Amino acid sequence: MIGSGGSLFWSLRILGIGATGKRTRKKHIMSAVTVVALSVIPLIIAMFLVNGMTIGITRKYINLSSFHAQVYGVTDPAAFAAEAEKLEGAAEAFEIREAYSLLYSQNGSYTTVVKAAEAAYYDSPAFQDELSFIAGSSSFSSRASIMISETIANELEVTIDDTIAVVTVTQQMGETRLKPAIFLVTGIFASGYKQLDAQLAYVDIDQSQRIMKDDNRWYMGILAEPGYENDLPQLRRSLMGLVDEQGRVVSWDQLNRSLYSNFRSSKTILYVIMILIILVASINISSTCIIIIQEKYLEIGMLKSVGVDNRILQRTFLYTSLLIGTIGAVIGISLGVLISLQLQPLLVLLQDLGVSALDFYLIDIPVIFHWDEIALVGIMTIAISGLSSILPLRRVKSMLPIHLLQE
Image (cartoon, rainbow, N blue to C red; front, side, top):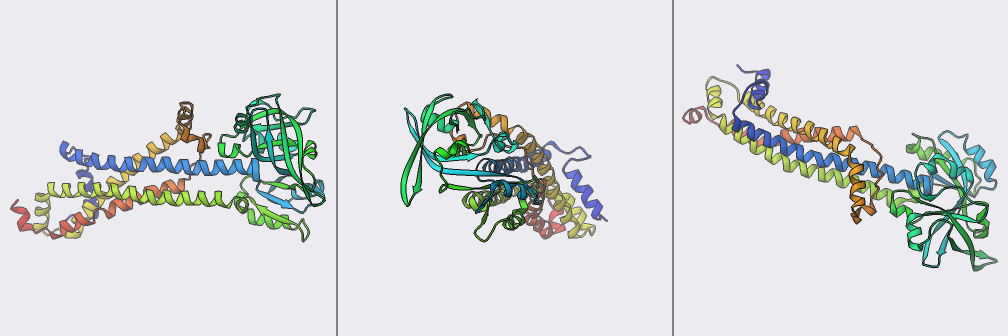
């Protein structure tokens, strides 16, 4: 009698593993494996893109714009920074001022938020690692100077050592007033994400008094320690203990709810697409399994005639479907990972060729693999491959030995 081990051995022989099979049979099997692999490859690449862009864009927004947390209502910035940096999970604290501003040059105008920070922030790895300077540097000259993104520089048609006018709106004695000042462009940078670049301009906090008064928005920007980003509620509670009743602490995900929601929606859509693509591939596996059963009519009839149980025969073709799914998943995941590792140079090449759609994506994607998600792709592929054999297995059960032997 054929047992469980015999079913597996027969399924391996059907697949041509460990034995020489017919070329026609292998062609059907290789076709099914290829379809599964081709279904898995784009899923792995898409997963890499979503994870890399989510983490990369989030990191840039935090380090260059919103910080992990913003604390309002601080009366003594220096004293607060010293106390905050002692808290578990808090790495650095900086005094930040910002104001909505109109930037003017002889060739154009632009509206953005101008941020002012102390020199320690501009020298920190959090700032330096997220930017590449196209021209100039992050140091400010003795004159009132400003750093702007490449996006803003192109809109204003300015370069290093050009001057621009910065106009802010202030409230003085209950009246709205425009506060203009002239700044020298000393740095032009790019973060790699143009949507963020459109919002970035920096001045030194000592020079910011020319355009930012006490009634402009200011706060303490808090950067968390590496690995502590997922425990921001605890950090927020700790920071609240350092301010009075008038104080307020806001985390980055609260400040960027729409961005955070988009990231979560993107992953959900990815999982739905992943299931649909694998389901389509399972149809090919089911068809292949039916073809194999047709080829094995005589063998199935002989085994049934000598008393082999239907469950054993069904188990053989279930193993065949699972093995096809497993082999296809392993090949697809391996090729998907290899292609994903080379994806950044490919995106850079496409951007250099002028593919405008890439302007909305982060090109400098960090290489981040969530191996639990990759394992989930493999498990789902194998599971759906097994489910695809349900119809062929019912066909095996309905076969009668006398009919099969007449074939």
